[in-house]
Image (cartoon, rainbow, N blue to C red; front, top):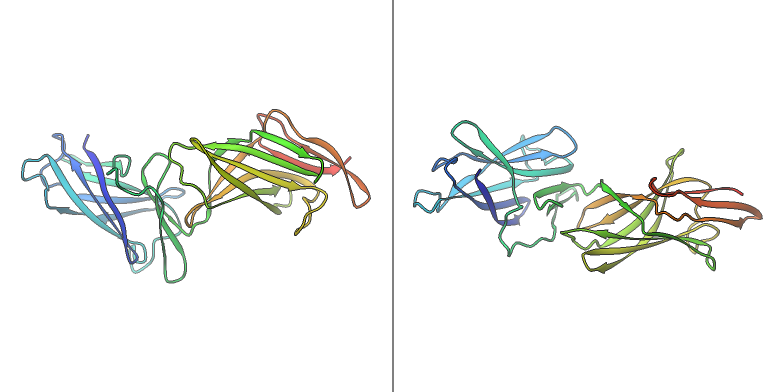
Length: 283
């Protein structure tokens, strides 16, 4: 199989310039047709962007074909911007029989910046280009929260002084871009009401640690966690992007009784291996 090698990713206005080379191994003709395929991750969308062959296209006998492509996110076709969502970037190489389609980015120049690169469209829509967990190039249009898997909370503690449930854990990533924000999102199972608290983030070897404190009797700004059954998830904010991790319960739950508005309430959490839930109800 040919081996695509990414050498450059940069913004020029609303156009993303992508450069690289293909190492030939007998399956690629000297002057192949080359396209970038943008595949919608959560849908069936496919956009094809032609790439130009560049100097050092293999005719000099060096065994490589250079390419350059421009992805205009404001005009991705018919004068319309690239639709909102996640788009994975593949490279399609015209071979003797059919196109060879491969992810673009796992093999790339060592000086390429791994940090997301962000642009804003005229309507203030955020567009960020980044490398996903597999190292492949991807584009996030709109920055909406997207589910990115699940992680087990390390511990649920009870802060008796402040009457708070303390959720702590660790996220391990081979390629971790340090988030700029973290929130513990709690979603009430029946009403779909949401309740958010800040998750404090701290870098650690191979990943990051998070800590979130959920008040159940009082809060400085907002009301404490209302009655109900609340499913927990961790939302991490990057450069214009948001990724949501479902939280799984640790082995040891919280099970306490508190007094709120002259009534006794029971606060109890789920246990492993179930998803993490916090239930506030009658004692």
